[in-house]
Amino acid sequence: MNPRSKNKSEKYFSMPTPDPILVFTRPLNAYRIPYMVTGSSACIVYGEPRLTHDIDMVIELTSVSIPLIIRAFPSREFYSPPEDVLSVEARRPTRGHFNLIHHDTGLKGDCYLIGEDPLHHWGFERRRVIKIDDTPVQFAPPEYVIIRKLEYFREGGSPKHLQDIRGILNATGDTLDMAALHSFIKQRQLESPWALTKAVSTGQDGNPP
Image (cartoon, rainbow, N blue to C red):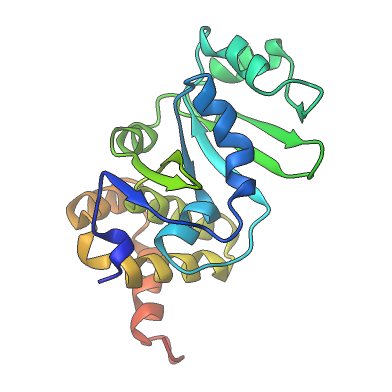
């Protein structure tokens, strides 16, 4: 078993290039805005290392936290949407979204809003704290990341998503909540990409795993 997956509540893991994540999560921490990091950044932690320049996060955005976003990401350092745009996105029951861009580095934070999506809420309740350079960062659980990667593969067909899932399964497979994972796969009609992922993981597609 990968030693990084032993502790489900808090882990201490030093990433080689933490700045892209901390550029966005340190301000969120400072203003206590609820979030979780997901996407490729989470895959680096749970699976196999690879380069990524965009940081995916799920954020709980309310009328109270909208002004905090403006303060956490000031215009002299970041591009952030105006308050009225954030308000519109916050009212969407699903698929609310906005971007943050760090001026000095060009790094982009893709922020997806928790809304009413049960998968987002399930993941939020099971966030994992991972320390990066002594800074606690809230990460989505690996089961959530797998489901989202299956959805991305269904939408776009990029094989990198299956590769990311395979990396997570290889590293954390024996600690995953398989009942919850299979439940979301069924609810979100992801049986076909999941079967393909399993085939790739075991080499049943005719290629080496």
